[in-house]
View (tube, rainbow, N blue to C red):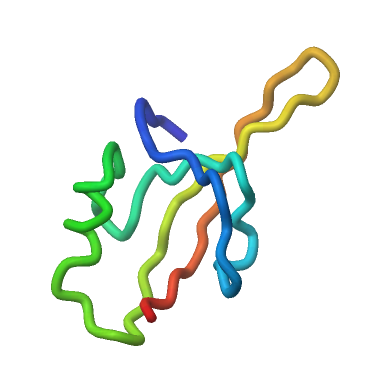
Length: 79
């Protein structure tokens, strides 16, 4: 999955979407690429309470000497 920037998940609140882990990179919300908090605000602007959006997270893991990137598609419920 091509990406050049994003926001790192540094902490999770109760009720965080399943599959999102600390250290994941938030790369996209809906059609909006995420490069800063301003992009997050833009992606959520005007969305009603209870709306659902799909977000793309990139998980980075190490297996032996190999770094592995995994794309995660996660549904986010706005509340």
